[in-house]
Image 1 (cartoon, rainbow, N blue to C red):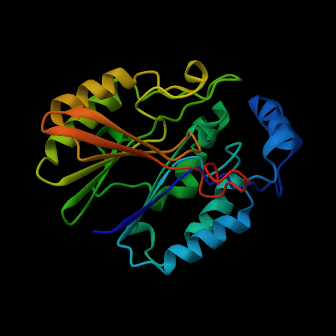
Image 2 (image 1 turned 30 degrees about the vertical axis):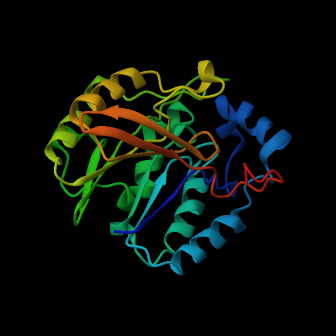
Length: 257
């Protein structure tokens, strides 16, 4: 199987958004957009990225979160419009949320991400007990275990958490798919990074303990807007951990572009 990994697309679309939508953490986020990032992620690059993926001999595409900036439905709809252009279709395009996709409690409560990106973030089986994450997609000899670290947090935090229930389900899924090439999809890195106090995955130690017990063939993440390579200890040898930069970041620095 040949698959592409993209992340942190940050589609900006404020069409039809009311002023009331910014009476929360979104206000601080929008100010940051105006100061630093409004032109940093042009949606034209997202469309061009998807057009380029259509030219590649791919079997699958994975997107590890942050499709939006402020978890506005209009942003998620704009991101989905680009993804819908992928010829593989939702069955072979797997999407998980990032912290920007559950930026405020309203987005979590109303399940904006799930309602817009639903076909791209559903497992092969109906989850027991209604839990949405993790979900599992088996494609031939590959099993994608897709989890969510996204949660609303007060500014200036951009951290994430899996939670005890999801951690247990991840371990169960990894154990059940032993024998296949297991790919864990997660937004936040599983190892310390810059500004760790503000941006970390809070229960990453618990996740690493699980990976050390049951193993995994590959971990993919986003969040840092940088290409990263690392390894974790696994029961059968090192587990590669690969983070990708933002798929739409227009920056003069080659290492960030």
